[in-house]
Image (cartoon, rainbow, N blue to C red; front, side, top):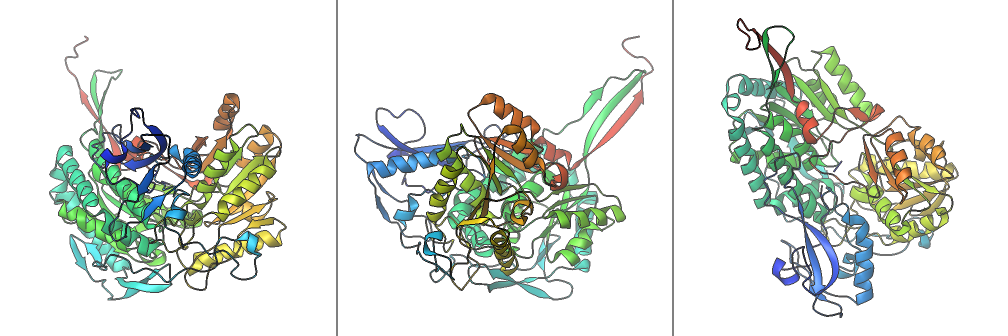
Length: 630
């Protein structure tokens, strides 16, 4: 799943360190990708949806001195680094430069020294000291944001649930409640569907032109940028992901995605089809109606954009159910949507639980389309409920056990860095995480040792602290599940290279964990862990690794590292996955379709294919009494 690389911004202004382009005789020390928030893309993360780079340079061969940009709510700190350190950091960042338009934030190693004090070495509960990165987490920082919206959003109004019940949404850093949110149930889903149906059938929304809809989406994107820091802080507080990742990657990507879909709103058109008989044939693409959407907790804002953007661009109305773990950010940005001019009833948001609110939405007879992102097992239930009700079409973006294949001719340093990112990004809570790392036997030991060294440098801590790469897992259930998988790996005979334990006694922090000597039959190599646990497997030749990589019920993504063009072409054709990245990973773009083979789902998010999810096709046939060709 996905956003653009967004590293710490060490510049106070573009003029101080320069915008990407000729270095003008200065010594270039490193590139840091930033987002340009002024795009008006015309295609799904469209043609103009470009990342902007800041080039850090100095006028001589001496090392540059930087002062970090003082982001809202954080104090500015001073950085002075040596030339070798800057060059080493720049080399490490080369692997992530390919991700400059992905939704991921590659936290630079440099930030560990800039914002020192976040790493404490040792052991939390008996794991040898050489195997871990941290033992304790400092007292949590007070988030720089307030929770203002905890009710359901139905027909343009924030309202209590029909039952009056609420449930707590928890801070993953502590396990303590952030707020109590209205608990939507069957009756609330029905109210939301009625509002969406009324808005679709008789409200102002279906009467708007594509251009008018696009203007609302553009205004919404502008508001997202205006409230960037507030939205990012709420996302971090509710989800546990690093604030820098949310503020510099995910929230800007939300705005860019909406601009991309705004560009599509007035470009959806039909066709004139030649017929064998004397008839005029039109093929129309019309909005499907009321779309039910169920989003997960790992990327609440991005999944909001992936679902809501194409549905609104096509002219549909929506009932969106948020994950019970992360309801807050969707409520906030939905309020901004209405400030942008979205008519009442077009976007309705229900917070609640899967077995009640989710099931009610999937089985509702007046929902015309369902889109779900989550686990494969839950996806099966959703599909069955949709079939048993009104046979509504369903798109599913489900789980994965994605392979990364490192050939013996690969750039090992690059492969180590990108494979590390592919697994540990977002605390390992990614459906497309590269969770099976296959490494050629000739470079296996080198890869394992370098991967261990990188994991030991990973900065784990309070996600509101600058420089932190990894925050807590989402909740107690996921936390316990990951620790269970780690124990399973040890019990099954895999070698615990590093990590393997929790960090501290408060919150849901887990050490970056690596296993080597992993075999295909082991549980950690077969099942989706959804956590910071990397499994490194050994292989001998291309045919063997292709067969092993494809031996899984999943088919979401894959990565290949090689300098051999023939090998790359072989892998890209042979791997049964919806996305294959060559010498990179987690490179996302709004124009690139995303989805899976096999039990990783059906349908595609993003790109032109995502629009097809929310359109239905109508053929109009009219007889021609005087055809021009007769």
